[in-house]
Image 1: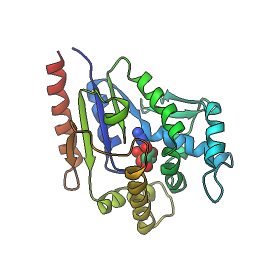
Image 2: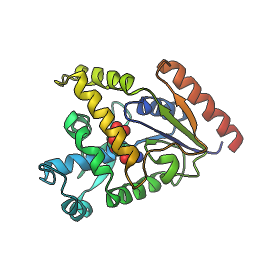
Image 3: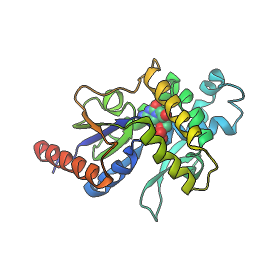
Image 4: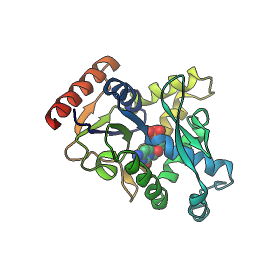
Amino acid sequence: MGKIIVAIDGHSSTGKSTIAKRLAKALDYTYVDTGAMYRAITLFVLENGIVQESLDIDKLIEALPRIQLSFKKNGQSDIAEICLDGESVEAKIRNLKVSKWVSPVAAVREVREKLVEMQQQIGLDKGVVMDGRDIGTVVFPEAELKIFMTASAETRAHRRYKELLDRGDEVTYEQVLKNVQERDFIDSTRSVSPLKKAKDAIHFHNSDMCLEEQFERCFNYSQRVIEKAG
Ligand code: DC
């Protein structure tokens, strides 16, 4: 059976990665979390004094060739984790501090060029489910299946707030909502590869849809496309 590329794009905290991970498992495909790649670069930026009051874009561009990103499979979860210099940084990239700076970092053209090239290499043999903001528009405009996920900012902030509380982070709902809205704005209005729905993507508004229903729909879409691809 021919393999395809599944591109899942959408706003932050729409549940893209949860669905993408499950779908990859069900199809026996590789899951690639491109947001984790932008977050890992942001962690590097924070740990190396490239951000003080504001982001020093020249310093970031100069440091880019030294930032070694890779994915390594976690033996327990079977999910590929993002690594900086060979060390998994998965546990350090989901907090509000990284979330606050990741959108400005992701708006830098040179950062995007580096990561898009890596993403295209990973997808060369197809058989991937990749989630992000520009997968169906820039990384794989020819992807066989494109899904664009949306949900209201409030629904998404509630989901992310619960996740952060469950992890023991001290945050308020208002802080999380503000971050979600700010990231929506920066991600959708940046000049390089702004977040937008690809013309041929299936629009998936999931505010009122449970996870099971979302997964089943996405799985059915992919089965149909895979059958057609032969
Ligand atoms: O999916 P996420 O919330 O972990 O992504 C973090 C940020 O990275 C998001 O605010 C925008 C950026 N991003 C991007 O610009 N392009 C991608 N393909 C993935 C993420």
